[in-house]
Length: 328
Image 1 (cartoon, rainbow, N blue to C red):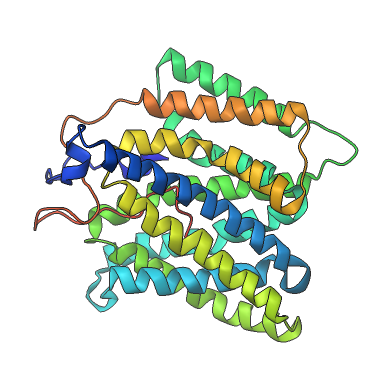
Image 2: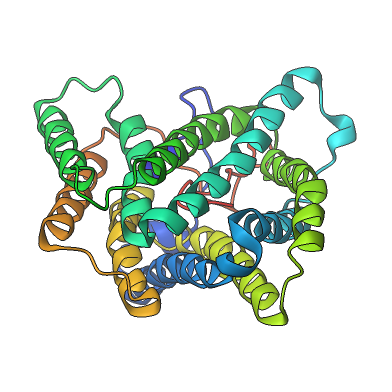
């Protein structure tokens, strides 16, 4: 969601990328849409492939591999220099590392219990809550009521309701909301992607003993390892890079609206890849949540100064942190 990409009000304006400025370049906008479509499908396909490895190494083993892939990708792109960080800079980085460690684990544990579509939809409440927080607009109030009703439908008691799985998905939502807020702080205290890269490295290090223990005691097959690695690439590396390139071609607000369809992607991929079926009420609830998120993002007030664009900035302005749609 775009809320995590808003620049701080005190930030120096930067020079936007030409493709984002020139509305006449249809090819640039079309390329951005293709990148966003690929990012969303890659993210959810990676999660579905990860689920195929759960019976062998469990969510913990898969998440450990994914965190290691994310740390490698962000380390190569961000090239952090943590030895130069101050205590004030380390604090939000370490908090972000803990969020990294918990966000994907709670989501994957939820996927194992309640399925991909429902887990991702409930997790999406995190960024939506951040967008709604503090709003006084009537349209946002209506959206919040609609979302609350949809959540009640998705979590309604049935003989097969898994409340532990629902709780894990909601925990993932809390982590995602914290991820957005912490990224804002990290982005104002550290240049470029150094903060996010360091947080990913710390998170990956936290999973070293856990992942090693799981992989030693649950002896993974080559197929399970392949699925875990594919999940790391498809759900971390590909969306991260695709989102950064997309934001050079489309406005950030359009990016946020388009990424609102991720729960639909998740439900469709869950159906096709994993054979997970949702009933009509669940599909309707997902559609309402997607619609509410689209309304909130598309009507959010934008700052008057120009938005920053990844990779194109003045010498005194840090490169933005990763877009929050990308769960590293």
